[in-house]
Length: 429
Ligand SMILES: Cc1ncc(COP(=O)(O)O)c(C=O)c1O
Image (cartoon, rainbow, N blue to C red):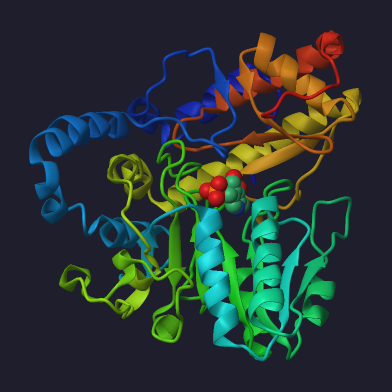
């Protein structure tokens, strides 16, 4: 176990020992003074992605035109899906890249529910990302009121300890024979708590339920073993730790064992068995490809393919090792420097239970966050009610960056710089 101290020399020493340090050069960094702690919302731009975007526009769209579809565009969702599969423990043929996390959740959750029409319980938790909760509410509304005469219920598991850890006992007892689907964020977006994927999947399977994992905050941040855990379904984004770019296409995973049993609720031509027969009746494509709907956004998809290269090359074990050291170090600096000013750690202390971000909580969190962005050249983000979220992306963040970031947070509270900002919030926090 590393014994930390608060000196800047110590941070520099950690940097010299960092096996991933050279990866920073592979990202576009225009302002070396900026401490970017929001790679868990939007990853930095890899140079490979910038070069690829130009090449796709100039040479593929510009020169190949429609011929591009036969030169790698049509297969992009499955080709890139297989690459992401390597990061999440999924054998080839189970992951496709497409649409958004929200719409992929809609497709997979609806498929899981319509596959088990006699079961009416959906289980999630209060830690899930709000869009996931809204999508589930929408599905409940759609399937209960429009199609079926019976009512679906959505159960939300609550927290145990000041919004850091979900109540696992409550979760265990909520899963019953009427449960069709358990759907959770693998790493939760506020506290960074990691669910035990293997255990929850087993609990659900024991009652005959399917499980759907949202991997948005874990993909590219920690090793994931979907096949090994016998997972059923998963979704996730590529714009956070995978550095795919703003609004880059998301992905979905459907375990081979259930692919042929599930039906997408959106029957589009990209999910059709032989789309270029232009037949008048829908017949689902084999495998996960049936969950495609319409034409995919090639420029952002191919840019994202180039953006994930550094992650594939670094490997998830090395990334996770650095991530743990970074979040341990940040927790130490929170205790040493920030606790005296009213901050508390809003994330698990045990690194085995924590993803690659931590939340630090303060009653004036929103205004402190704003002061950091506007006058200290530090970018975290703020999540209600009092969380300043600090994301640690191992491929481009150094330990000296973390030291600098915490030093600047300390100055904001020491000098009460945040007090001049209104409590009223900006649109995007
Ligand atoms: C855990 C999680 N799920 C879902 C979403 C929504 O993703 P999208 O906007 O791509 O639908 C987000 C967005 O940040 C997220 O963090």
